[in-house]
Image 1: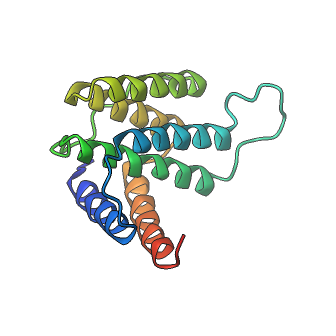
Image 2: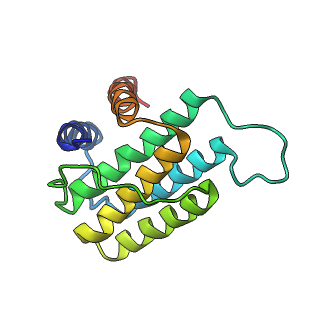
Image 3: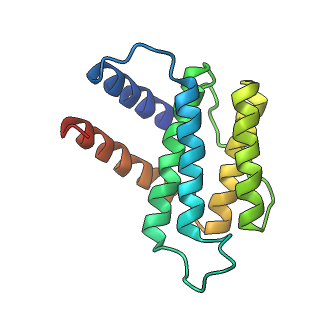
Length: 161
C-alpha cells in the first residue's frame, strides 16, 4: 500500500492540531508513548492475551478503529523524524500468534524511540502489517478506516476534544 497520501493527511492533521492548541514543544516522546498506549488498547480489544476470560474480542469495527489510531501515531512519528519518504508499507513479519506480534511490536516501537532510523521505523511498520494480516484487515480497509478516523479527529478538534 502506498503511504504517501497517509503521510500527507497526517502532516496536515498534526499541523492543524498543533496550531489549534498552540503547541510548540518537541512531541516525539509524547507521540511515542501515545503509540504504545494505542497498541495496548488494540491488544485489549482483541483480548488475545486474556487466557483467563471466556469473553471474545470486540467487534471487528472497534478493533479496526483502534488499529488505525496506532497508524495515526506511527505516521506522525515518521514525520517527526523526516522518515515520511517511506512510500510503500514494508512487507509484514510472518508471525501467526497475535500475542507474540503485540510483544514484538512493542519492542520495535521502543527500539525506534531509541534509534530513529529508517530501518527501525520500517520494522514497526512490518509489525503492524503482521497485526493486520492476523486480524484479517486488508490495506484497503485500513486506508478507508484511516480516512474516516482522520476526519473524526478534525471534528473532535473543532468540538474542543
